[in-house]
Amino acid sequence: MCGVVGIVAVHPVNQLLYNALLLMQHRGQDAAGIATAQGKRIHLSRGTGLVRDVFRTRDMRNLAGNMGIGHVRYPTAGSAVSAEEAQPFYVNAPFGIVLGHNGNLTNAAELEEDMYRRDRRHINTESDSEVLLNVFAHELQQAVSGLTLDPDAVFAAVTVLQRRAKGAYACVAMIPGFGVIGFRDPYGIRPLVLGARQEGTGKEHILASESVALEGLGFELVRDIAPGECIVITEEQEVFSKQCSQRSSLNPCVFEFVYFARPDSQIDGISVYDARLKMGETLAAEVKASFPAGDIDVVIPIPESSRPAALQLAMHLNVPYREGFIKNRYVGRTFIMPGQEIRKQSVRQKLNAMASEFKGKRVLIVDDSIVRGTTSREIVSMARESGARGVIFASAAPPVRFPNVYGIDMPSRRELIAHGRTDDEICAAIGADALVYQGIDVMKSDVQGFNAAVTGLEASCFDGHYITGDVTPDLLDRLEEQRNV
Image (spheres, rainbow, N blue to C red):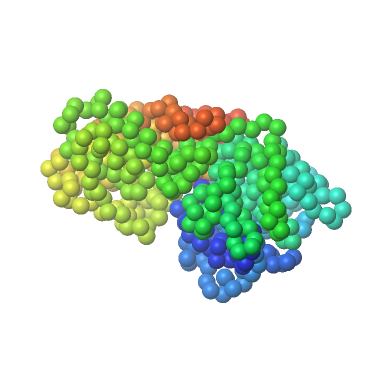
């Protein structure tokens, strides 16, 4: 999962891009990058680490111009994070293009081979984002007639790209002297929104992965970019858009609502916070059916994203809600950290249990999901060490039984605690007395109920259905082999 932003502004854009990336830091903590355009010149700064650590004062001074794009990354495909893997990526022809990508291509290997043999383009990293950039660049070169670049040429290039590239992608790109471009895959798996604001006598536009980036900068949310749509924002603030896919449908990734997105964001017309509240409400019905009244003394969330669900659980169960775990905000998300031992150690660094909220009580611990089980196992252990009389564990999402190939770092089946295990076996593995999961159909209904235009949800990590239709057992095996190298 990554975060992307593109802005065409009236004044220098560097600080706006920096602030937008800070607002989307939750989407990737491993690398960050900003590219700006000043006339025909592209300025690029990128590196590994948090946004605040990547960019220095001298970098910001060098990022001149009123137009630019930015990216925060954690790796979903490719090698370990390095400066070469940080985005945006740049290619010099045609015109000079920089691109940032959120998602994952399922046919990246085939495209890379095609790039080399047919299009005569060299891919220098293991990143599928560089592949995507080169596909776009090649198709744009084919679409341009003469030396003039216009929105129609961009739309023609994206139309062919969407036929060639499979998987999930929400992208922002920039061409100096022309404008900022955004496009989304035909299934709308990864989010992308458009915003605008009045700045003096002029108007400014922004594209971003989440609406929270818009609101924090004073932009108003105009709308979500539609699945298969491409949008062009010129240097003159003209906005052009076109549906570039012959077949498109809105199927956002449900894990955005479960875990990844900030609760104060709206994705495809759905409040993330409202969706999480609803999941807690329906999970409460499941807990009520499993445990008699008085069997639970207190509801305790795992901060941060499980709080809305835990609040609803406590209210509907009529039991106290307590903050039993205090979070160290300076430790990254554990399930996207590389290496099992690092994840295990970081749980204790990230969370500290307050013994007074556990001692002698039968506690219901609520988390947004259980992926590898590392966090869950350590949390149950911490609750028992703090004197809990009993530990019931509730997940606001169904069991994660299948790998995700659309941009979330869970591609290996053997790393998923629910893969090949029953609920009772999972309960025993994390050390809880009882385990309650949200139902798959209920979860989907909870989210889709907020927007009738959402025709489906990409929920492959829960139900094993890969919506793009090109994910085979051979592909999953190949991804696992690459991961284990």
